[in-house]
Length: 318
Image (cartoon, rainbow, N blue to C red):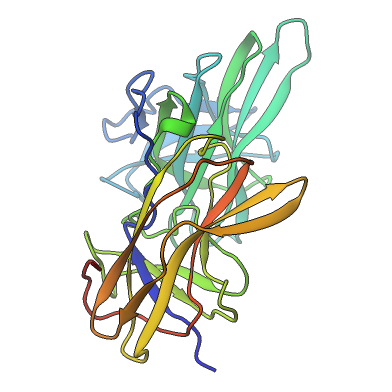
Protein backbone atom coordinates (compact mmCIF):
# COMPACT_ATOMS: atom_id res chain seq x y z
CA UNK A 1 0.00 0.00 0.00
CA UNK A 2 1.34 3.38 -0.93
CA UNK A 3 1.55 5.86 1.89
CA UNK A 4 1.28 9.62 1.70
CA UNK A 5 4.47 11.56 1.21
CA UNK A 6 3.68 15.26 1.21
CA UNK A 7 5.89 18.31 1.27
CA UNK A 8 4.55 21.09 3.49
CA UNK A 9 6.01 24.60 3.36
CA UNK A 10 5.17 27.77 5.29
CA UNK A 11 3.25 25.15 7.16
CA UNK A 12 0.84 26.58 9.70
CA UNK A 13 -0.10 30.17 10.28
CA UNK A 14 -2.49 30.93 13.14
CA UNK A 15 -3.71 34.51 13.32
CA UNK A 16 -6.16 36.36 15.53
CA UNK A 17 -8.10 39.52 14.74
CA UNK A 18 -5.70 41.76 16.69
CA UNK A 19 -2.09 40.98 17.54
CA UNK A 20 -0.50 42.46 20.62
CA UNK A 21 2.99 43.91 20.35
CA UNK A 22 5.96 42.17 21.90
CA UNK A 23 6.71 43.35 25.39
CA UNK A 24 10.27 44.13 24.26
CA UNK A 25 12.70 43.40 21.46
CA UNK A 26 14.08 39.90 20.97
CA UNK A 27 17.40 39.15 22.67
CA UNK A 28 19.89 37.30 20.47
CA UNK A 29 23.16 35.66 21.50
CA UNK A 30 25.14 34.77 18.37
CA UNK A 31 28.71 35.23 19.73
CA UNK A 32 29.81 36.90 16.52
CA UNK A 33 31.54 39.77 18.37
CA UNK A 34 34.08 37.38 19.90
CA UNK A 35 32.67 37.61 23.46
CA UNK A 36 30.46 35.28 25.48
CA UNK A 37 27.83 38.05 25.58
CA UNK A 38 27.16 37.55 29.28
CA UNK A 39 27.24 33.74 29.35
CA UNK A 40 29.58 32.18 31.90
CA UNK A 41 30.51 28.83 33.46
CA UNK A 42 28.14 26.96 35.76
CA UNK A 43 30.07 24.65 38.09
CA UNK A 44 33.65 24.35 39.30
CA UNK A 45 36.21 23.77 36.57
CA UNK A 46 33.80 24.58 33.74
CA UNK A 47 35.12 26.71 30.86
CA UNK A 48 32.90 28.75 28.52
CA UNK A 49 34.61 30.29 25.48
CA UNK A 50 33.80 31.61 22.02
CA UNK A 51 35.21 29.41 19.27
CA UNK A 52 35.35 29.31 15.45
CA UNK A 53 35.46 25.49 15.51
CA UNK A 54 31.75 25.26 14.69
CA UNK A 55 28.90 27.66 14.04
CA UNK A 56 25.20 27.35 13.29
CA UNK A 57 25.09 30.81 11.78
CA UNK A 58 28.00 33.15 11.13
CA UNK A 59 31.48 32.03 12.17
CA UNK A 60 31.42 31.50 15.96
CA UNK A 61 29.63 29.62 18.71
CA UNK A 62 29.87 29.14 22.49
CA UNK A 63 31.92 26.12 23.59
CA UNK A 64 31.41 24.55 27.02
CA UNK A 65 34.11 22.20 28.38
CA UNK A 66 35.47 20.98 31.72
CA UNK A 67 32.13 19.66 33.00
CA UNK A 68 32.05 16.94 35.68
CA UNK A 69 28.34 16.91 36.60
CA UNK A 70 25.13 16.86 34.57
CA UNK A 71 24.05 20.27 35.89
CA UNK A 72 27.33 21.89 34.87
CA UNK A 73 27.21 24.04 31.75
CA UNK A 74 26.85 27.59 30.48
CA UNK A 75 24.59 30.09 32.25
CA UNK A 76 23.45 33.69 32.14
CA UNK A 77 21.43 35.97 34.39
CA UNK A 78 18.05 35.33 32.79
CA UNK A 79 16.56 38.37 31.01
CA UNK A 80 13.08 37.38 32.19
CA UNK A 81 10.50 39.70 33.70
CA UNK A 82 7.94 38.29 36.12
CA UNK A 83 4.54 37.86 34.47
CA UNK A 84 5.87 38.03 30.90
CA UNK A 85 5.94 34.91 28.73
CA UNK A 86 8.94 34.08 26.57
CA UNK A 87 9.88 31.75 23.77
CA UNK A 88 13.48 30.54 24.06
CA UNK A 89 15.23 28.99 21.06
CA UNK A 90 18.81 27.75 20.75
CA UNK A 91 20.93 25.45 18.61
CA UNK A 92 23.24 22.85 20.16
CA UNK A 93 25.86 20.45 18.87
CA UNK A 94 28.30 18.07 20.56
CA UNK A 95 32.04 18.26 20.10
CA UNK A 96 33.22 15.66 17.57
CA UNK A 97 33.72 12.12 18.86
CA UNK A 98 31.06 12.13 21.59
CA UNK A 99 27.99 9.94 21.88
CA UNK A 100 24.51 11.43 21.63
CA UNK A 101 23.23 13.16 24.77
CA UNK A 102 20.30 15.26 25.93
CA UNK A 103 21.02 18.98 26.05
CA UNK A 104 18.53 21.02 28.04
CA UNK A 105 17.78 24.66 28.71
CA UNK A 106 16.72 25.13 32.32
CA UNK A 107 15.76 28.05 34.56
CA UNK A 108 16.93 28.24 38.16
CA UNK A 109 15.17 30.71 40.46
CA UNK A 110 14.42 31.21 44.15
CA UNK A 111 10.85 32.37 44.90
CA UNK A 112 10.49 34.82 47.78
CA UNK A 113 10.23 32.84 51.00
CA UNK A 114 10.67 29.55 49.18
CA UNK A 115 13.27 27.05 48.02
CA UNK A 116 15.27 27.18 44.80
CA UNK A 117 13.40 25.64 41.86
CA UNK A 118 14.62 24.24 38.55
CA UNK A 119 12.27 24.45 35.56
CA UNK A 120 12.90 22.82 32.20
CA UNK A 121 12.37 25.11 29.23
CA UNK A 122 13.49 22.92 26.33
CA UNK A 123 15.44 19.72 25.69
CA UNK A 124 16.49 17.57 22.75
CA UNK A 125 18.78 14.71 21.83
CA UNK A 126 21.94 16.22 20.36
CA UNK A 127 24.77 14.60 18.36
CA UNK A 128 28.12 15.63 16.96
CA UNK A 129 26.82 15.30 13.40
CA UNK A 130 24.84 18.53 13.13
CA UNK A 131 22.98 21.28 14.91
CA UNK A 132 19.81 20.49 16.86
CA UNK A 133 17.13 23.05 17.64
CA UNK A 134 15.89 23.49 21.20
CA UNK A 135 12.74 25.51 21.70
CA UNK A 136 10.27 26.09 24.50
CA UNK A 137 8.14 28.63 26.33
CA UNK A 138 8.68 30.00 29.82
CA UNK A 139 6.76 32.16 32.30
CA UNK A 140 7.06 32.72 36.04
CA UNK A 141 4.66 34.73 38.17
CA UNK A 142 6.06 34.58 41.73
CA UNK A 143 8.50 37.20 42.96
CA UNK A 144 11.89 35.50 42.59
CA UNK A 145 15.60 36.12 43.02
CA UNK A 146 18.70 34.69 41.31
CA UNK A 147 16.91 33.86 38.06
CA UNK A 148 19.34 32.04 35.76
CA UNK A 149 19.01 30.43 32.36
CA UNK A 150 21.50 27.64 31.78
CA UNK A 151 22.36 24.79 29.40
CA UNK A 152 23.15 21.36 30.84
CA UNK A 153 23.74 17.85 29.49
CA UNK A 154 22.77 14.31 30.48
CA UNK A 155 26.44 13.40 29.88
CA UNK A 156 28.29 14.67 32.94
CA UNK A 157 31.55 15.21 31.03
CA UNK A 158 30.09 16.06 27.65
CA UNK A 159 31.41 19.04 25.69
CA UNK A 160 28.99 21.01 23.55
CA UNK A 161 28.50 24.09 21.41
CA UNK A 162 25.61 26.57 21.66
CA UNK A 163 24.69 29.14 19.02
CA UNK A 164 21.96 31.53 17.90
CA UNK A 165 20.16 31.65 21.25
CA UNK A 166 17.07 33.85 20.95
CA UNK A 167 14.81 34.98 23.80
CA UNK A 168 11.53 36.36 22.47
CA UNK A 169 9.19 38.19 24.88
CA UNK A 170 5.52 37.55 24.21
CA UNK A 171 2.45 39.59 24.83
CA UNK A 172 -0.67 37.47 25.07
CA UNK A 173 0.56 34.14 23.60
CA UNK A 174 -2.92 33.41 22.24
CA UNK A 175 -2.63 36.54 20.08
CA UNK A 176 0.81 35.86 18.66
CA UNK A 177 1.08 34.30 15.18
CA UNK A 178 2.48 30.79 14.85
CA UNK A 179 4.34 30.04 11.63
CA UNK A 180 6.72 27.40 10.28
CA UNK A 181 8.98 27.64 7.23
CA UNK A 182 11.53 24.87 7.97
CA UNK A 183 14.40 27.03 6.72
CA UNK A 184 16.58 26.06 9.71
CA UNK A 185 16.66 22.40 8.52
CA UNK A 186 14.51 21.19 11.43
CA UNK A 187 10.85 20.20 11.76
CA UNK A 188 10.34 23.27 14.01
CA UNK A 189 8.42 21.36 16.70
CA UNK A 190 6.10 19.52 14.31
CA UNK A 191 5.79 15.83 15.24
CA UNK A 192 4.11 12.78 13.68
CA UNK A 193 0.70 11.74 14.91
CA UNK A 194 1.60 8.06 14.48
CA UNK A 195 4.21 6.31 12.30
CA UNK A 196 4.88 9.12 9.83
CA UNK A 197 8.47 10.35 9.42
CA UNK A 198 9.07 14.11 9.22
CA UNK A 199 12.16 15.79 7.80
CA UNK A 200 13.09 19.27 6.65
CA UNK A 201 13.86 18.80 2.96
CA UNK A 202 15.47 20.80 0.17
CA UNK A 203 13.71 18.75 -2.53
CA UNK A 204 11.07 21.42 -3.02
CA UNK A 205 9.87 24.63 -1.45
CA UNK A 206 6.95 26.98 -1.83
CA UNK A 207 9.04 29.87 -0.49
CA UNK A 208 12.67 29.90 0.57
CA UNK A 209 14.67 26.71 0.05
CA UNK A 210 13.10 24.06 2.28
CA UNK A 211 9.82 22.35 3.18
CA UNK A 212 8.66 19.54 5.47
CA UNK A 213 8.76 16.07 3.91
CA UNK A 214 6.20 13.63 5.30
CA UNK A 215 6.62 9.91 4.58
CA UNK A 216 5.80 6.50 6.05
CA UNK A 217 2.16 7.24 6.84
CA UNK A 218 0.02 4.23 7.79
CA UNK A 219 -3.43 5.79 8.25
CA UNK A 220 -5.53 8.59 6.77
CA UNK A 221 -5.28 10.59 10.01
CA UNK A 222 -1.51 10.17 10.29
CA UNK A 223 0.58 13.22 9.43
CA UNK A 224 2.40 16.20 10.95
CA UNK A 225 0.97 17.82 14.08
CA UNK A 226 1.89 20.85 16.15
CA UNK A 227 1.04 21.28 19.83
CA UNK A 228 -0.75 24.64 20.12
CA UNK A 229 -1.88 24.27 23.71
CA UNK A 230 -1.69 27.73 25.25
CA UNK A 231 -1.52 29.42 21.85
CA UNK A 232 -5.23 29.25 21.00
CA UNK A 233 -7.78 30.60 23.45
CA UNK A 234 -11.31 29.55 24.26
CA UNK A 235 -13.83 31.73 22.43
CA UNK A 236 -11.34 33.14 19.89
CA UNK A 237 -11.21 32.57 16.14
CA UNK A 238 -8.07 31.90 14.10
CA UNK A 239 -7.12 31.78 10.45
CA UNK A 240 -4.97 28.83 9.41
CA UNK A 241 -3.22 28.16 6.10
CA UNK A 242 -0.83 25.58 4.70
CA UNK A 243 0.78 24.96 1.30
CA UNK A 244 1.03 21.32 0.21
CA UNK A 245 2.33 19.53 -2.86
CA UNK A 246 1.86 15.94 -4.01
CA UNK A 247 4.45 13.75 -5.67
CA UNK A 248 4.65 12.13 -9.08
CA UNK A 249 3.47 8.76 -7.75
CA UNK A 250 0.06 10.12 -6.71
CA UNK A 251 -2.66 11.06 -9.13
CA UNK A 252 -4.59 13.00 -6.51
CA UNK A 253 -4.98 13.33 -2.78
CA UNK A 254 -7.41 15.18 -0.53
CA UNK A 255 -5.71 17.05 2.30
CA UNK A 256 -6.99 19.27 5.08
CA UNK A 257 -6.25 20.87 8.43
CA UNK A 258 -7.82 19.52 11.61
CA UNK A 259 -7.90 20.54 15.25
CA UNK A 260 -7.77 17.93 18.01
CA UNK A 261 -9.22 19.08 21.33
CA UNK A 262 -9.26 17.23 24.64
CA UNK A 263 -11.87 17.50 27.36
CA UNK A 264 -11.12 15.55 30.50
CA UNK A 265 -8.49 13.58 28.58
CA UNK A 266 -10.95 12.56 25.84
CA UNK A 267 -9.83 13.65 22.34
CA UNK A 268 -12.21 15.11 19.77
CA UNK A 269 -11.14 16.06 16.26
CA UNK A 270 -12.83 18.65 14.07
CA UNK A 271 -12.03 19.69 10.52
CA UNK A 272 -10.91 23.31 10.37
CA UNK A 273 -10.66 23.51 6.58
CA UNK A 274 -12.48 22.09 3.63
CA UNK A 275 -10.36 19.26 2.32
CA UNK A 276 -8.65 20.25 -0.92
CA UNK A 277 -8.05 17.85 -3.80
CA UNK A 278 -4.40 18.22 -4.88
CA UNK A 279 -3.53 16.64 -8.20
CA UNK A 280 -0.21 15.43 -9.50
CA UNK A 281 1.77 18.25 -11.08
CA UNK A 282 0.24 20.96 -8.92
CA UNK A 283 -0.05 21.91 -5.29
CA UNK A 284 -2.78 23.53 -3.31
CA UNK A 285 -3.31 25.62 -0.22
CA UNK A 286 -5.59 24.73 2.65
CA UNK A 287 -7.00 27.77 4.35
CA UNK A 288 -9.46 27.96 7.21
CA UNK A 289 -10.95 30.08 9.92
CA UNK A 290 -11.73 28.18 13.09
CA UNK A 291 -14.97 28.34 14.92
CA UNK A 292 -14.81 29.71 18.43
CA UNK A 293 -12.98 27.21 20.59
CA UNK A 294 -15.01 25.77 23.45
CA UNK A 295 -12.35 23.54 25.07
CA UNK A 296 -8.59 23.51 25.46
CA UNK A 297 -6.76 22.91 22.20
CA UNK A 298 -4.08 20.23 21.95
CA UNK A 299 -2.77 20.22 18.39
CA UNK A 300 -3.31 21.21 14.79
CA UNK A 301 -2.50 18.69 12.10
CA UNK A 302 -2.58 18.00 8.38
CA UNK A 303 -4.04 14.76 7.13
CA UNK A 304 -5.18 13.03 3.97
CA UNK A 305 -7.77 10.27 3.52
CA UNK A 306 -6.04 9.06 0.33
CA UNK A 307 -2.41 8.12 -0.38
CA UNK A 308 0.03 10.44 -2.15
CA UNK A 309 3.72 11.41 -2.32
CA UNK A 310 5.90 14.52 -2.77
CA UNK A 311 4.87 17.36 -5.20
CA UNK A 312 5.60 18.98 -8.50
CA UNK A 313 4.47 22.60 -8.50
CA UNK A 314 2.97 24.82 -5.82
CA UNK A 315 -0.28 26.60 -6.64
CA UNK A 316 -3.21 28.02 -4.78
CA UNK A 317 -6.51 26.27 -4.98
CA UNK A 318 -9.63 28.26 -5.81
